[in-house]
Amino acid sequence: MGEFLTNIRKEFEEEEEELVKVAELRILEQRGSTMEEFIQEFRRVARGSKYEGRPLVEEFKRRMSEVIRRKLIEAEMPPTSIKQWYECATKLDRHWRESKREEERMKGRREQGITLAPKQQVPRRQEMPQQRVTEPTPMEGVERTNTVVIRNQE
Image 1: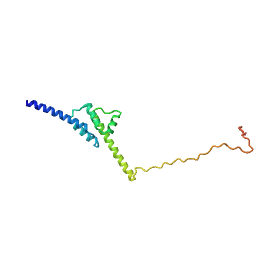
Image 2 (image 1 turned 60 degrees about the horizontal axis):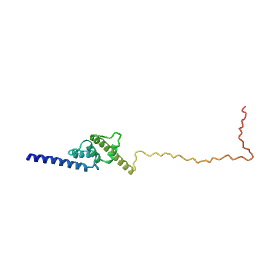
Image 3 (image 1 turned 135 degrees about the vertical axis):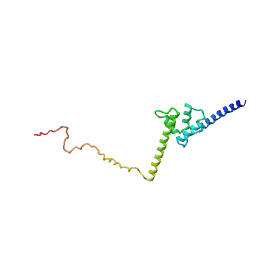
Image 4 (image 1 turned 90 degrees about the horizontal axis):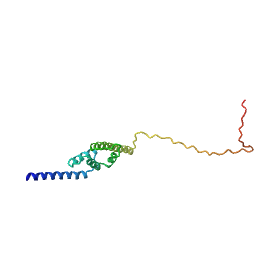
């Protein structure tokens, strides 16, 4: 009878541990952590949850940064396996963070008045004064005709 109770306790403990891991997984969020940090934590929590395959991918997608998730879903060839999701999300997170750092550096330079290249003045196109087109005024005493006069060029 002792062995029977031990087996039952063990089974309930494993089931309870799985439920705890699932609950932990469902409250996990990336927030400000890097993708590498988030993936480590996600793997740790998911290890005992018995999630695998598509359900694991779906939980990962729900818990990661919305910006990165959207970009990966909209990609020409979105990742399918959890390994691909980890790799693609890590790359995208690195690029995004580098882009943000670069924006901050450029913003700091602009605030200090430092520019990388002097701005070139583009000459403005000068507007030519518009001339009014008018009909020629007839000269007094001269009759206007539409005949062409050809002079002899001998």
